[in-house]
Length: 476
Image (cartoon, rainbow, N blue to C red; front, side, top):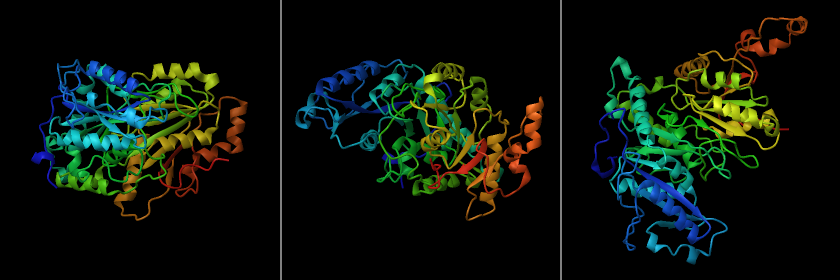
């Protein structure tokens, strides 16, 4: 399939200080015409653009009137979504004077991303398109002068890293891989935002791998997670360096998590293990000289926490290095009424992390199994590493899991194990009680990986599970 507009699929490797030229796709949810107009005015002001004066135009973009602070010349593509409490549809969508694209209330964010993303790429303007999940998300991006530079560096890092997996030791040109991949955009979620939603940035060459579409006609999960984790399966996804930590106020079982929200599928209910899109990405990389078999598996970390000890959690979240660029650590917190101050302290301590972390906080105490399940549902990775919140992980832990997974894959096993059990070493006894614990044999359960090569179960303080329909865990 030829690239959009007949352009070549390879692009010059971007200078690390250069901002990308990017359009923004924004689903605008409002309860009335008045609210929609007010939100639109905020967007236009932040982006230094003004609505087109031509009401007869079918385009939903806005022409630029001046260069915004972000050092890019963005085009805004706004999709108007009515909420359940909106005015009557005939009145609400009487917005020809605003020159934006209306979507009836049954449409979702995925529909806006597909329709307006397709239009943005077809218009032939920007190389990249940022898919935001809300007006608040778009505004948070436009408020930061350097977000476009960070995303440009992220795509360059993706290209350089993939080039390091060249076949037969031959150096693959990173320039041919520039723009390949998906960069997630996270922001401080607002109260009422949904659970763990993501914005993403894609290059126009994305359409060559997805049969000319932004999303498949029948997405297998929420669009943000689907795009991110599909690329993560070929080590071509990363969270933007502009914001590695997520945390936000929440209600019900939503999070005190940060970063985003999008309408779509139900967690891992339809977790895609092998899709046509992944095959297309692998075939493209193989044609570029990349040894696809050597690429590390997609892998996330889930940590349930009740005590919320910042010193331990910072070591878990910021310590082990993953071979996969898309690895995200999900910390799920229980007992919020008693540990709210600790969550705030943890957020502060992790605010400078160089590894992506999402903090989820339950509004009511639900127990450790529920915590693990919530973290698993938030992930779309092929493998989930479960850890307790009181462990001190070896810096090479995630790479060790990646190596053992790849070893089983390279051996040609048709059926991969459901998981791998890790070791948990207890400190040496330091008093009578700890000595008695050691003598009782209780710690042996945590050291099962040293006792047998084929355990029938693993301790959830350190275990790697293959994601699939057998997860999440059964809750009593």
